[in-house]
Image (cartoon, rainbow, N blue to C red; front, side, top):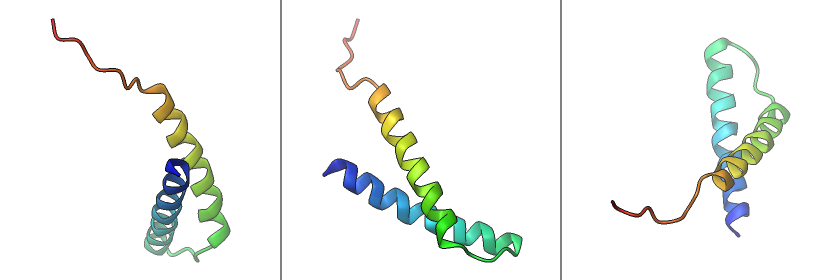
Length: 60
């Protein structure tokens, strides 16, 4: 379920960013570009999350 929500929110945020940045540059909006970037960013977020340790840190 965590992967679904990661994909869902990443997809929405990347679509929004694609629209806003395209509007600022005067480029027409393409859903497919945002979908491709959303999938790539989701994979990167999952990889980064798996690399970060979640063990408690011992205090010295």
